[in-house]
Amino acid sequence: MSATVIARHSTMGEVLEAYPSTQRALFQRYHIGGCNSCGYQHGETLEEVGHHHNIFDAGEVIAFVEQAEQIDRSLGVSPGEVSLDAASYYAGHGSTEVRSMTGGLDALTAEVDPSVPRNGPPRDPSDEEASLRPLRSVVSEADGCQRSEGA
Image (cartoon, rainbow, N blue to C red):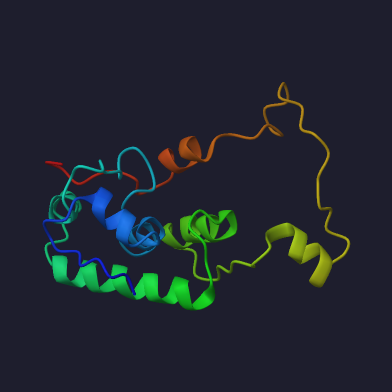
C-alpha cells in the first residue's frame, strides 16, 4: 500500500502519483477518465471529480482506489500495461467477461494458441475499415460517455 495518504481534497495528480492504478480503477468502476467528456484535470480534487459524476461519497471512492492499488501490486501489475488498460476500457463499458493476460498477444501466441499471429500485416491507412484509430477517439464515441449535466 502507498505511504501517501489521499483524501477528498487531494488533487487527481496527487492521487495518480500515490496510486498509479487509479486511472483504470476509476474508469472501470465509475466510468471516470475514459474519454474527453468523462475526463478530469490533474488539478481537480478527488471530491470535485466525484461531484462531476454524481458520486458524493469520497470515502467510498478512496477505499476503492486503495483496494485496486493493493490488487495491482499483489499481481505485479505495472502502470500503463496495455492489456489491462484495454480490459478496463471494456469492463467500464459494461462487458462482464473481460480478461487481461500478462504478456498480451505474445503470451497468448506462445502459451495458448500458436496460430495467433504475433505481428499482423501492416494496415493500409487508406482502407478505412482496416485503419487503426486512436483509442481516445474510440472511447469518446462510446455510449454513455457524457458528463452529467452541470459538470
